[in-house]
Length: 174
Image (cartoon, rainbow, N blue to C red; front, side):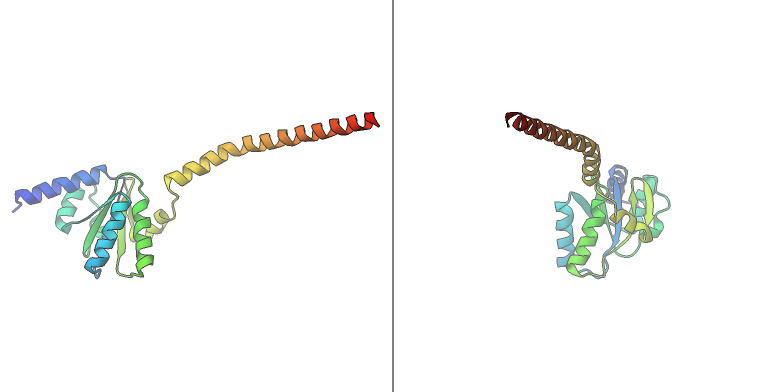
């Protein structure tokens, strides 16, 4: 029988599912308290919300948010990372945390990335995506490159013209 606390929790998680740009499901079985606290700190610094929630309530919230087919992602001791800004950051935080702490016990079981469901075997694609800032820098660099080349050519031509005029002037003086 659902009580008010569970109803409120399902409502809160449903809202998070609806607002998040990406949602990562992790199996943290075997992590100790210190490791979990360190992971939560890293998520906090990256502006990511990390929640441990009951699987049944999470399934109900996911279904309410329109994600009926994610039951296979919700297993083990489950923690959920919600990212509202940059959808690739949680995957990077998790993988760097695993490498830094030499853990083999924290697994990403799957994610919802921009409303598309990714299973654990497809997470590597997301990890290798460039961030929004990196893509913007590349784009601006691509736009600026032709103008920089044009300025370089014009400067080279001008300096060559000035050198030619100087040599002609020197020849006339002799």
